[in-house]
Amino acid sequence: MVKMIALYKQPQDKEKFDEHYFQTHVPITAKIPGLRNMKVTKITGTPMGGESEYYLLCEMYYDSYEAFKEAMKTSEAKASAKDLMSFAGDIVTLMVGEEVEND
Amino acid sequence: MVKMIALYKQPQDKEKFDEHYFQTHVPITAKIPGLRNMKVTKITGTPMGGESEYYLLCEMYYDSYEAFKEAMKTSEAKASAKDLMSFAGDIVTLMVGEEVEND
Image (cartoon, rainbow over all chains, first blue to last red; front, side, top):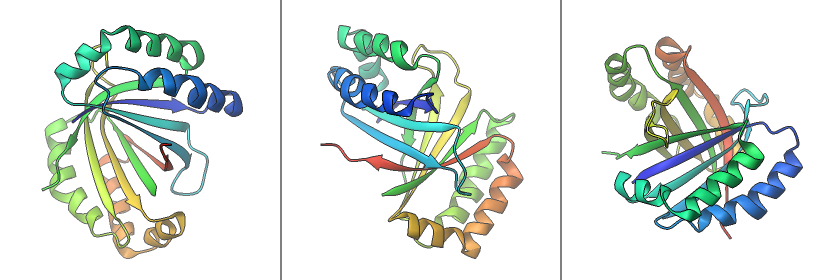
């Protein structure tokens, strides 16, 4: 499986971020053709109990790089990207990766 | 489920990093009591096809915050932390989080 990872730093207004993220951004993103699964992790802190620089991590799964590339060309993906930039362009980092299979 | 996330920036020597990570660090970490699952993702780039600032992401699952806190007190966790600092202290960021359940 190939996945896209979106890592968000702490937003200035967490309540506003959460509202837009869960009410608007997730539903828009969930429509992307080829998206197999979407897993959201709320970062609660550091292992030492301090506050993390990061706020939220989202993992979006696709069957392959090919499928991911095709998905990114769709109007749904473009709508998701446009929405992302509108509310979190300054705090999000996007990565693409592949899970290593356990032996 | 509660998870600890380790996010690694690009190491100076990828081959050396991979060797230590997979041959030494993963086996040491896998011994931590209470660790339910460990998922490693190799970051391959950005969605636009560029190189990412990040190299690898590891997710380590525990039953609860309590279980995680107890686990961190063990000699196995201390050995893992000590090893981590020895080879990646300058490039790793640690976070604790909780997966949001899908509706």
